[in-house]
Image (cartoon, rainbow, N blue to C red; front, side):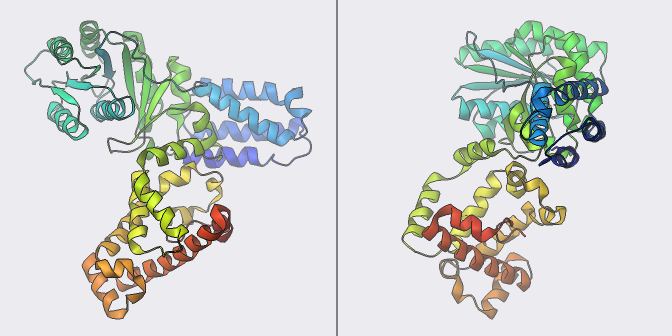
Length: 451
């Protein structure tokens, strides 16, 4: 998400970095580039006008012009205004209610409501340690109820059955009664969507809302739909007392205009963003961190949280002890690292959160794809246990057998063996000189195996 906007915006403000003095001319030129970047990202025009007005007002003031580093000061102003547009702080779910706290999810058809219900349920179960029940009042979309039942089974949430013959309001009432009977902490209620907004749909969703009395009413906004989605959010906000927005499909949206427009247009906070199709691909929306990503500053805090949440601590500690004792970094260790990388969103997900990675050439970024990681895992899986533990025994005939087993070419095996040797050297330096030695060895390049 934000790739196009980040490239244009960081390029515009970075042109001022290191300038000893700013003039109205170079500020005007930079703001023109910023305005174009925002418009090309499909940010709503009223949002662009207000954003540029606020930045210009601060840019020509003492705060920037009389700063010791005016270029950096202006970058800080742009960052702070981006944060202000998106909501200043993270706002999670407000579950301060007599259990079960009801969370109702609404939105247009195809926006990802059902998957979002499952993602939120998993987030509540794993992060908040809540007992969650999910129910579907979508009696129109074929297999919507079955889809939610299947997802509930994979994440360990309770499921209240319903059918296409039921009345949505009755489903809401029965789900609430079932959640109370099972002493659930949270009831997540999926509702029907349409391809477009119509009065019948709005009346039904109002009736379901009245029956469920939710503490949170979330609108699921498809970020790839741009301003159409933001206008739909506005219409839903007029019909329902929305408490927040969940942005979906952000992994497929390179522009990011919806994220910058949604809060300004609706006045409702963005609470979560969906970052992929899997049920674990959801993040709490932190405006400050997102603003840093847009300006190419990275998002190290989110990366650290993902590492803590998704890495296997036991395996990591075992590898650290092994390296400390001077033992080699073998193919089993490499496979563990590759698998954990996939769990954290793959290479593209990691690169977005590292500072300065916006400057990495696009050709290099494209080489760091998750398909390559999976191919490398397949090669390692095709090896014998002895070959994984002692890669140096892998000769020509073994490489041919490994390549055939993985369904790849011998050149792919050669490449992995070479990359493993490079990583082994890097790990050796790290065990002797710490992370600083490893970073010096990398010299700003991507890790071996991804470039």
